[in-house]
Length: 422
Ligand SMILES: NC(=O)c1ccc[n+]([C@@H]2O[C@H](COP(=O)([O-])OP(=O)(O)OC[C@H]3O[C@@H](n4cnc5c(N)ncnc54)[C@H](OP(=O)(O)O)[C@@H]3O)[C@@H](O)[C@H]2O)c1
Image 1 (cartoon, helix red, strand yellow):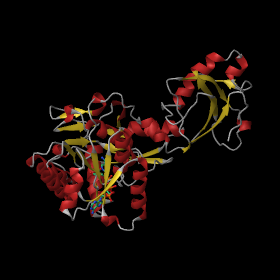
Image 2 (tube, rainbow, N blue to C red; image 1 turned 120 degrees about the horizontal axis):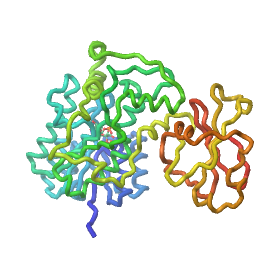
Image 3 (cartoon, rainbow, N blue to C red; image 1 turned 180 degrees about the vertical axis):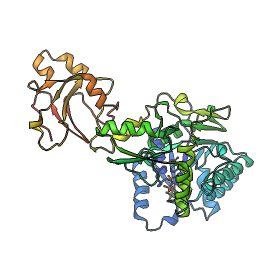
Image 4 (cartoon, helix red, strand yellow; image 1 turned 90 degrees about the horizontal axis):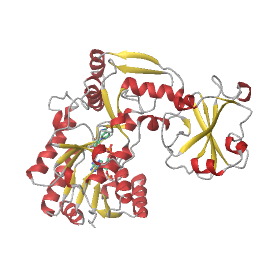
């Protein structure tokens, strides 16, 4: 059996870093996390580090201001993954990695280094606009140092973090989708690639021991998640049962208003410009220098855009999995739904195929909503566009999902009990 590499995560308490720690542990790697003395009395970070330890990670002390401490940390492992900050509106420390590269070079034992990239492939952004090109330029400086030092590497081009881009329906400065309006960037038809941050971590850990991605770029392009802003908005509209008011900002207006912003915002806006007006993520074929993650690791059940967006609904996201079947679908009469304005909610009952076959009682199988009118399953799938409820065990219970316009809530009951909504 191939031994799994030991991994050091640098930047572990960060937005992406904490997901990498989790994914590394989940995939069975001995996982070290750098604990920097500079975190001081940042209670959030300290508690996060302690929680990593509780989950099985090993904390190793080290500082970017103490070369030997970095060398010592690096010597403990086979693979180093760095997720140091690189978003100007938060913090941008990409070039600090040069110190880590020096440490890895001196330690001489590292089988793979994954620097803090996780976005647009910087090698394709040589014509990027100021001031945002600093992100790509700095990442290229780090790449050059890695390659000059002969350190084996994989660069992960993760495309768009879903939380930023889906959360805001591709609108810069927004991370929660509106229920009223949206500003479309240009014709809003450029294809963008969205990846759930936990999936980025899963794919990244999958690749560290994979010889197919040694000294290559791993592009994350889950095919179902390559969608235009317009398509994302449509998915959101379907989920909330409402059409948003739409306005458009032309590329000229976008660039003109950008000039009024501060430096950090301008950096972010230029990235949105390249992604949403120019389509820089999906307008090229992956060549010999790269591999595509969902093709290499088809076993990863990545989160699709519709499912990701359900987290912004009020209440709980609802989904139909392959192994569930619809028992009956009933429409509540408006009289029963005084508290829900607009379209009356639907009641939808599910149970597992196995449970369904077990029951010989027709009435029990159909459930408790016999008095209500049945509507077609097609209508349900129009509403239930997502596909999985990963944390949810339905084996022994009937599940009722109550869907109202703009709100999703649920209740569950054991199959023999009557159910009331909550
Ligand atoms: N594609 C996209 O949409 C997208 C979006 C966001 C980010 N990214 C990329 O993802 C990578 C990680 O970004 P992130 O948002 O996860 O980063 P982050 O949460 O802002 O920061 C990550 C970590 O960087 C470390 N750090 C920050 N300042 C430091 C300093 N002065 N000295 C040493 N360490 C410092 C800290 O680690 P510790 O305190 O734990 O040591 C921090 O937790 C970056 O390369 C970024 O460009 C891509």
